[in-house]
Image (cartoon, rainbow, N blue to C red):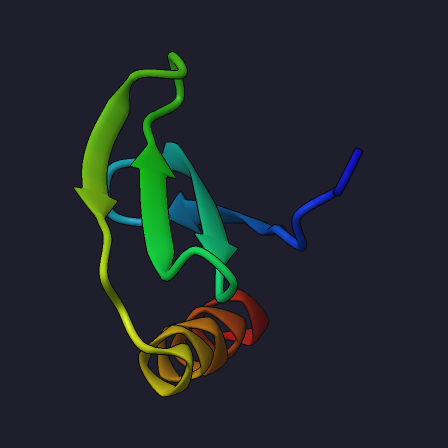
Length: 65
């Protein structure tokens, strides 16, 4: 059994007090965004590793702010 490396981020949007869960996988080249009810609201596939890394850096900057 092979496990895939997935990063999970939790983001709170201050304007609407909404909670989002973001999952990224550079192995699959996927990005998934879920709302606070667990509904998938955004799915992107076919992303390159560098694009995933840029998105992750941007998410970290948002979380730190």
